Amino acid sequence: MTRQEDLSVHEALELILARVEILKAEDVPLLGALGRILAEPVVAGDSLPPFANSSMDGYALRAADVVAAERDAPVGLRVVGDIAAGSSPTLTVVPGTAARIMTGAPIPLGADAVVPVEDTDEPWRGADRPLPDRIAIQRAVKPGDFVRYPGEDVRAGEVVLEAGHLIRPQEIGLLASLGVARVPVVRQPRVGILATGDELVEVEASLTPGKIRNSNGYAQAAQVRALGGTDVMLGVAADSESDVRQKLDAAVDSGVDLLVSSAGVSVGAYDVVKAVLDRAGDVTFWRVRMRPGKPLIFGAYRGVPYLGMPGNPVSAMVSFEIFARPAILKLGGHSRLERPSVKAVLMEQIHSDGRESYIRAIVEKDEDGYIARTTGGQGSHMMTSLVRANALLVVPEGITEMAAGTTLTALMIDWSGGYF
Image (cartoon, rainbow, N blue to C red; front, side):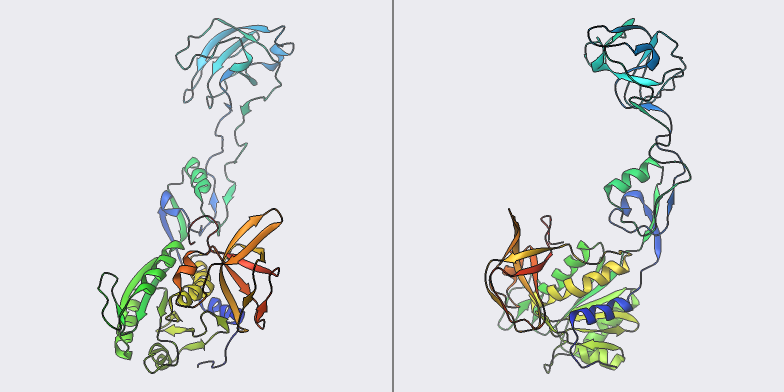
């Protein structure tokens, strides 16, 4: 049953998120887990480090032998061997002796500390330098100095990553150290993307009178990919219910997890998407009190959640940002669904129509905090002002005038140089 009243952005988003569920898990190769959400806890099978090793190139020795060592009065020790990383030493360090050791090499029996090579009289000449018979130690050390002990970082049997953890490069490195070659992660959402309208032609087509290129389909596919989802391009549907149904049926049969469309959701005679969903009998709401993007429909088609965006390109992208983005992140197992945001001081007066508004802006840091300037025309067809923007300024509902100097929340859509 359609809810005809306009909803607030918050009300609409709550209804959408209530209808989408975290997807099931799958095992992927280690590098394929990057950017994904861990579906099961990871328990360490080994300790890290797995054995006591040196954190420096230097000399393994007994700390008690060099208590009095200093640069003006070094302590001389006999050198009994050379220990390389990757080796398994059989020698023993006894009183009055030391063993040269490389970073990461195992600590030999008898030694309890390492003195860095810089604190000896051995000149640094690279890996081919000969092993000296004796070495002068120019500093005292305590037991444990420059030694990395087994389990200092991770103990075998310890839960190192909990389910729900985002896999970043550092997690990849940890998993590799633990010998985890395949990782259980939440499946990537498959999102069907449909553009509607008799006026649309493909990107490579030449324009003829009355025609425009299908920019929304490609923009939404890029938005899906940027979130780690898989875009399923459904092409362009003509302004007919049968064509829309045919393409939606094909998408559902292919196993998509979410359907996203642009255009066809307003009140025009050729806006057929709402009619298709109405006949399918599952429309949760239609229209949201926001700008840009008031005509927005949410429901389901054959059990698959469906978000119908407006046709104007900025409206479509901003609506996707506010509603589809958190839905896709939830499907993929993410717990943080919101954009990073900052408080920014407005540097100019802006106007709104009383709906919750998302103003394209550039946010920059100055000595007192963040400042914001609009990027040009705010018409829902003006993509260049979105291209120039790194943030969306949120003007609360019910406010029509914002004076320069007002502080607003800025959703940072381009925090690090990319749209997402």
